[in-house]
Length: 452
Image (tube, rainbow, N blue to C red; front, side, top):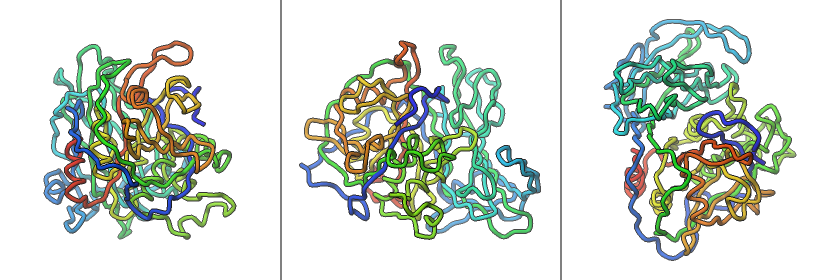
């Protein structure tokens, strides 16, 4: 189960339980349901900017990197800009690395923002890793420090992937993976930003990280305990593998106390396999062969943030999804269930983050301070069909939740906890995983919710 007593680490933490039985579908599919009605995405309180094209990569400031063209353009090390020592705070090892940097042009946020989250898609062969930083300008004309948004590698042999705590300038701070204005009521906002990407490799090596997507999502979601109700507009259910994190309870406790807190990687694995991607026997060879659904264990290990000491780092989950062939992953916010209907209609499921008391979501049977689940469709009455990893076994993962209850707990930014204290909600955070080359219908749906 989710760790309801754990303190929030940002807008909300991500932890819960899930495992699954594959449905037998090797890729995207829809259950037999009435025809889907077109939906129109709602006006956004979110700005999402990503650098993905060869032109994008050529537009930045490069020191030791080169833009690469092809089917999936990116940026990689050419001639390193220099060397530096990095002492891993989680192992104590000091290692010398060659590095090169790419810095984006300044992006003026379409929504002056109280929060921002970076995400990236990359390949990091053995002996390589990367760091993402954000530099922002406030509405008062001053600038932030260069904030570290993540130090990441797909594996855990060279460095321990990590967020960085205790970053603040008094006006803003970084909570694990989220930039946040310290006092939103003051009117101060983030109005523009740049991202800096630093690529590392062992000296003298030929391997290089390759980054295909780098983006930032800024948002200004108003404080609210309730949100307006949307009108149902879609009847469709996608066939998504079902995994429960609960069957992994006690397994690999070094990764956030085992499966009881693996809602995020379990949800990620469901959608990765929905798109037809699979881990190889070699990749899974480290997992105890007596464990069911070993791919969930692998997802937990591959998303674990050694500073946060959990698997719920949002960008780390998106980056993990993008390690699979021709998949992209982004972290964003949506504005209503109409946005989710737009995506489901195009065959794109979503992983959503929410928190609630036990009595606030009929049929859940639990309360949580932060939980991820996978939205796979909508019933004829407009209710939400979700693969909820906080289920006792794979067969029980598919749930139907009341539309109005579910929409409110997902989109609100304020709520009362079990002690009656006002705490925060996620305000519509979700992960979206989709093909590197979406079809026209998928592109249209993603553009409608602000993702390109």
